[in-house]
Image (cartoon, rainbow, N blue to C red):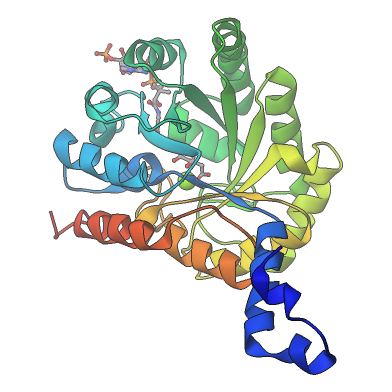
Length: 315
Ligand code: HMG
Ligand code: MG
């Protein structure tokens, strides 16, 4: 037992600052944890107009590896014709220093991308579907149904090799092409990815148009189909509501959130998709709310500073 507790004799003792600290410490150790899934090196850097050298991406990943994340998305293996910023994914995976206990993820759009990701040594892969037809076509030149048909054998092959698969659903709130997304469309795509074998589905407010009310409605529909512990929230901050949306999702029981150090990012095929929610912002807020993130916030700030310097104009 902590020595301070042995001195606890009266109500006044209990109210003393030392005891309060002791209790807070105890509460912290019992606090519920929330996991932050760092997506900056992928979702952050894919949208930077400047071509960032692989060495700088590797330095960012290495810094992030010291923060305490359990999962970091470090690359995508999409067509370099579509997203040239991510063409050096294999170099990044080969050059970074792997930290024990961290799963390094890569985004893949098709069989070719899956094979490249496996050859590069990704610990897990992520496939990405869309709740809306317009964005599915704009982002991958496929309908929602065609995407699902493409993902099913990839997910199967990945699981056979023992490589876990995460799924993203984009445009769960609104689509830059089709307008507002119905909560049922988001639920349908999330359930489909789960049924195909994804271990977790990340719900993307790709263009950051969500507000707590629309996030609530979307989650109500998704939670009818998918257990809460298989979900993550992925909020872009275009409308400045990402943090409020995280809090709305926390209320519904979601305990995993994607974010990018320094608030980098966006999707090149989603006009208006500004930065991701900044990891340092959400980590601090979660700690204020009493959740444990397991992150070293000082080290995280160093990563955020490094990421911010990579923004266009600062390279
Ligand atoms: P396509 O043009 O229909 O397909 O693109 P294709 O098969 O004709 O390929 C075009 C060229 O790319 C060909 O080269 C292929 O070989 C090559 P060519 O024959 O002309 O010389 N190619 C590849 N090369 C390397 N690796 C590959 C690969 N695939 C094709 N994997 C495709 C279809 C899906 C490939 C394309 O649309 C694509 O790559 N899209 C990805 C777009 C993207 O990366 N968007 C951002 C990620 S999603 C996101 O950010 C949202 C998220 O964060 C969640 C949220 O915020 O909501 C996840
Ligand atoms: Mg995103």
